[in-house]
Image (cartoon, rainbow, N blue to C red; front, side, top):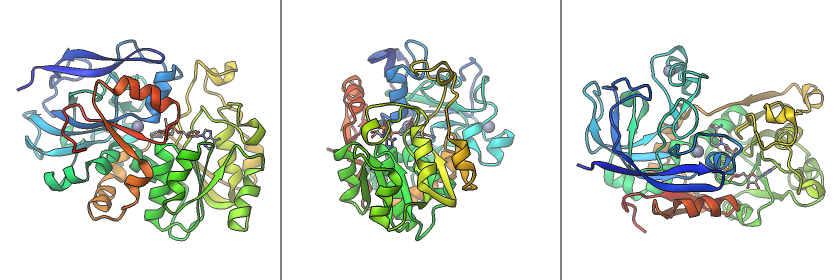
Length: 397
Ligand SMILES: NC(=O)c1ccc[n+]([C@@H]2O[C@H](COP(=O)([O-])OP(=O)(O)OC[C@H]3O[C@@H](n4cnc5c(N)ncnc54)[C@H](O)[C@@H]3O)[C@@H](O)[C@H]2O)c1
Ligand SMILES: [Zn+2]
Ligand SMILES: [Zn+2]
C-alpha cells in the first residue's frame, strides 16, 4: 500500500510545482471522518482551461493549493459506509463535489450542492471552492463515493478508451450541458464560441446530438483545423467582418438556433478588436449570433477577476448588451455544469463508439506528473492539444 503522494501545486501565477504530500485520509476538509468516502489511485487527471484562470492569477487560490478537478481513478480504499463500490473499480469523478443529500443534489443539481462549500453553494476539487484537495496527484480522497462516482462497466474495455473516458469528469458533459441549455436538438444550427478543448467537446457533442450546421469560431488556426477536419464549419474571428455576416456566408442566414459561449471572461474581440480583451465580448457575440426566440448557453467561467481592467469587472460586473438581447426574447443560461446529469449516457456513447471523432477533435496528449508544470505553460499559449496527466504510467502510448 502506498504511503506517500505527489501532486501539482499552485505557487504563484505562472508557477506550478510538483510537491510531496501526505497520503490522503478518509477525512473531510473540516477534519470530520468520512466513512462514505474512498481513496483513488489516479489513472488520468487532465489540465483544463479552468485551471488556466488559476495559473494566470485571474482566479485567486491559496499558495500551495493542490490543482486538478478532472480525475479518473481506481478505487484502492473503501470507507465502511460505502455500499456500491469495491477495490479495483475504475471510476470517473465529476468535478462538482456533491453530497447527494441536500435539496439541490436531490434535484440532480450537483453544480450547486448546498453543503460541500461553506461559502457558496458550489464545491469543486482543486479550486478555492470548499477546500477540496485537487486531483492532479497520484492519490485522491473522494467523499460521498456511492453518490458521486461513475463506475465503468468493464476495466479492460475502459482502459482501451481511457483518453476519451477521461473527458467525462468535466469537459464532455460540460460541453453537452451548454448545448442542452441552448436547446440544441437534431437538425439545429449551432454556433460554438471557442475552439479550446471545451468548445471542441461542444462541437463533438453537437455532432452526437445530430445538429445540422455546426459553426465554430476562434482565432487559432490549429484549433479550428481540428474541428474543420471533423465535420464542422469554422470562422476565423481575426477576420474583420461582423459575426452575423460570417455566419450568413456559411449558412445563408445570419443567425443560428443555438449558440454557446465556451470562452469565459478572458474573451477577445472580433477582427481589428481581436487584440483587445473584454469579459463581455463572448457573451454579447453568442447573443448576437442567436435568432430571436433561440437560446444561449454560457459555459465559460465569469467571476470577479483581479486582473480585469475596470473596478466593476474586478468585482465581476460585466457590460452585457442587455438592451439588444432583450428584444430577441432570449433564454440565457450560465453556471457550472451538473456533470452527473450527463456522464452516464456520454460514457455509453463512448463505449459503444458513437463518438469516433472525439479523439481526433480533442487531440489528447498523455504526460507524466513531472511534465505537468511545463504543460501548463504550453497549454497557456493556446496549443491545439488537451493534456492528460498519467501519474502512474498506466496509459498505453
Ligand atoms: N461551466 C463549467 O462548468 C465549466 C467547466 C469547464 C470549463 N469551463 C470554462 O470553459 C471555458 C473554455 O475552457 P477551455 O479549456 O476550452 O479553455 P481555453 O482557454 O483553452 O479555450 C478558450 C478559447 O476561446 C478562444 N476565444 C477567446 N475569445 C473568443 C471569442 N470572443 N470568441 C470565440 N473564441 C474566443 C481562445 O482563443 C481559446 O482558443 C473556460 O472559461 C473554462 O473555465 C467551464
Ligand atoms: Zn475542467
Ligand atoms: Zn448536496
